[in-house]
Amino acid sequence: MTALVDQPLEEQIAQWREYLRRRQAFHGSDIEELEGHLRDQLTALTESGLTGEEAFLVAVKRMGSLDALSREFAREHSDRLWKQLVIGPGPAEGSASSGRTEMLVALSLAVAAALAIKVPELFGLRPDGGAEMFYFRNGSLFVFPLLAVYFIWKRGSGVKSALRLAPAFAAAALFANVFPFRTNGDTQTLTVLHLPIALWLVIGVAYMGSRWFSSGRRMDFVRFSGELAIYYALIALGGIVLIGFTAMMFKSIGVNPERLIGGWMVPCGIVGAVIIGSWLVEAKQSVIENMAPVLTRLFTPLFTVLLLVFLGTMAWTRSPIDVKREVLIGFDLLLVLVVGLVLYAASARDPQAPPDLFDRLQLLLVASALVVDGVALAAIAARISEFGFTPNRVAALGENLILLVNLAWTAWLYARFVRRRGSFATLERWQIAYLPVYAVWAALVVIVFPPVFGYR
Amino acid sequence: MDMGKDLVAASATPLVLAILAEGDSYGYAIIKRVAELSGGHLQWTDGMLYPVLHRLERQGLVAAKWSASESGRRRKYYRITRDGRAQLAAQRQQWQVVDGTLRGLWMQACPA
Image (tube, rainbow over all chains, first blue to last red; front, side, top):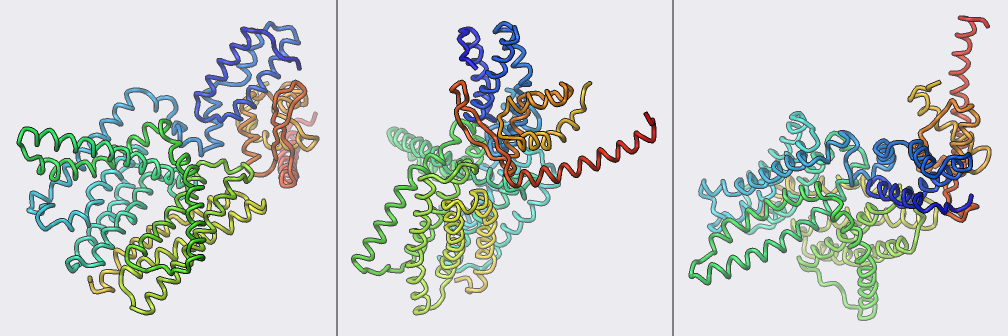
C-alpha cells in the first residue's frame, strides 16, 4: 500500500479521526486501528477505480455509523463508560434540557440538605449550645439520604430501591442516638468516625443502581468516591475564601458575622457541598476525571521513598514507635492511603497492559507499607497486652488487621502480576471484592462497641 | 441476501477464530476474508469487527500485537491462543449440531 498523497482526502481522514476522538468510548489505539482499516479500505477502493472522494464516502459508510460504533465500543470497554454513561438512553442523555433538570434536582437536594441541618435547632439543639456531639454523630444522616435520593433519581431505580435503602438509614439514626454515651467518651468518638464509613456503602448501593453486584460498577463507585473527595476539597477551599471575605467585610462595618458564619455558612456549606460535589462529578466527569490517577502517579513514588527512608531511619536509630492514640490512627491512615493509591492506580489502568516500572514501584510501596505496619502492629499489640483493651485500641487494631490482610494479598497478587504469572484483573477483582469489608467493620464498631465497652 | 442481525452476531466469534486459526491477521484482512469466503453474503459493518476482536482479546481467546505493516504504519495483528483454539473446537461442535439438525429437517421437507 502506498501512502495516500491526496491532500483533500488526508483532510477528510483527519476530520473523521477528530470525530472519533470526541467520542470517549474510543481510545487512542482504537482510533489508530480503525484509521488503519479505513486507509486499507481506501487504497483498495481507489485501486479499483474510485476517486478519492467516492472511496472515502464508501469506506466511511462501510465502517458504520459513529453512534452505533461508539455504543459497541462502549459496551465492550465498559470501564470507559464512566466517561459517558450514554449506553442506555442514547443521545437524549446529553441534551441541554436534561442537563438543566439534573442541575435543578441537585440544587434542590443541596438546599434541602442545608435546611435539614438547621431543623434540629427548632427543637432547641443548638450546635454552639451543648449539642455539638448530636451534630457530629448525625451529620452524615442529614445529607447521605438526600444523596441517595439523587442517585435513585439519576439511575431511575424507582421507589422500590428507595424502600430497600431506607431501613439502613433508619438503623443508622437509631444507633447514633439510642446509646447513653458518656460525655467525651471514646465510643462516642468512634461512632462519629465510623458511621459515615458504614453509610458510604449504602450510598454505593444507590450509586450502582440495580447492578451493585457487578464489579465494573463497583470500580466506577471507587472512581466516583475519589473524584468526589477532590471536588469536595476544591469546594471547601473556595468556601474558606468566601468565609474569609465575609468575616472581613462585615467586621469592617462593625457587624459581628459570627452567627452568619458559624450558624449558617459552615454547617449548610458542609452538607450542601456533598450533593453539589457529587453532581459535579456526575455531570462534568470529563473535566476532572483524570485527577485521581494523576495524583496517584505523583504521590506513589514520594510515599515509597518516605516509607523506605522511615524504615532505614528506624533501623539505624533503633528507636521504637511510641504508641499513643494519634499514632494508632496515624498508621491506620497510612494504610488507608496506600490502599487508596493502589485502588486509584488500578482504576485508571488498562488491565490488559503488561507490567511496567510503575507497577514495580507500587509493589515496592505495598511491600514497604506492610513492613512499616508490621512494626506498628507489634507496638500496638505490646501496648494492649500491657495496658489492656480500650475501645480505641481495639478499633484501631481491627482496622489495621483488615487493611493488613488486604495489602498482604495485594502484594502477593502484584508480585505474581509483575512476574507475569497472573493478570492485573485478578488484583482489581480482589480490591473490589474487599470493599464491603470496610463498611461491615465500621458498622460493627458503631453497633457493638458502645454496649461492649460500657459507653465509655 | 440480507442476513439477520442476530445470526451475524452469533457467527462472528467462530468466524474470526477460524480465520485466525489459518494464520495471524488484522482487522481489514479478516473482513476481506469473510466477504471472500461467503461470496459477499456475509457483510459486516466494518467497524463492528473491532469490538468483537477486543472482546476476544479480553477473554484471552486471541492475543494482539502492534507491528509495522508493509506501508510503514503501525498495525494491530491478532493471533489465536490455545484457549482460542479450544473455544473454536467447542463452537465448531455446536454449529455442527445446529447445521445437522436443520439439514435433517430440510431434507425431509423438500428432498431435492
